[in-house]
Image 1 (cartoon, helix red, strand yellow):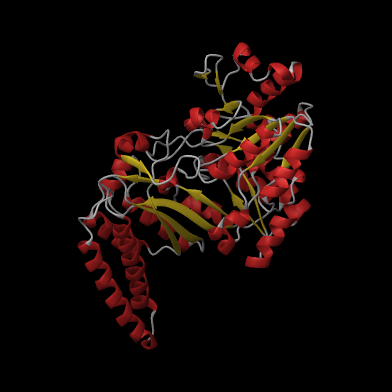
Image 2 (cartoon, rainbow, N blue to C red):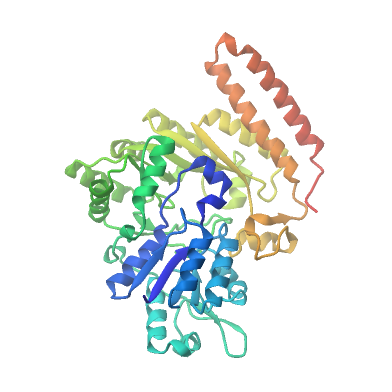
Length: 470
């Protein structure tokens, strides 16, 4: 074996996901595996999703040491660091990559990584593997001499050095599909069916997002948008249906409907082949119109997630979302008119948000009436403009090795209790609004309860208005 690829997500360590139970395969490392195998490298994948840390540690301690590649994101950092330490103690060389390590290269190197891969990893890993094969004993010092692009490492004098960025892969159609056969896809589908009655698979049609939202990370793909040919995507979907018989799919693009001409071609190709796999996806309100909704419905989209974030145009402009509140409302209405469920993402706590912005968001959701909405309190991700803006006021609640960027608190921002009241207000107001439109006489008691809870939420919101993060 030349390379073992793994990640740090263990389902059994995620209480929230254990309730939701909608796991998907780690497409990122499966793309790395298929690329490197096509180049002749002996690659294995240890998928941690349904595994346990001891099982992976046992493999690392009992196998002849090789090169270990670990995918890391902001939610898996503590687990990745445990894997890294175990691997180093067992004699492995370790490289880390993914959305987070490029922003924390020094910390990952301090934790023991031999190199940090920054950006897309396919070509970089190819070059690192060649250097290690040429002289395992000289690795990772040989990385410095070779000046491999897209990596960070420690020089002989202990400094952290970042090489020049690596150019992104220009032609995605030249890349093989993800190496799904090296993981237990059947278990993923079975888990979905056991908990939701339908088995789901995931795929991507493009890489990257060209938009400039200040809180969003572009660490791996940059602000690019590279799209696969519609026929090649249809080839993959046809194979997925034949191989795994899924009931539905998650299209994991950052913004699925960016390119309207592409969508037209893809819909025509799927229709020509008689293919239809129900799916859900994410898009932006400004990339949705009546024709796009018709195409999504034709293709089998049953749920469309829209990044709304706020009902206050002032906050949206501060985020540089480049969409309007009205565009979001129109997009939700268009989706529902085509029988597509509308999902909405919302974010509390962005810089400058006050009670009037929260009230605007509550009214926005009531007027839009999405089928489902999810809320979060904003958190700064290192490497983003939002992080840089609030960096002087950041306080971490945990040591870096134990936490994530979600554990930052922003001094001077409203307290967590403030946003708990905001969330309570939103959910109770929306429920009352829906009862008013669709409720029956039997719901009179619930209306009274909701009105009381709304009053309590508003009172609480104002009572803790002056509370701020210390």
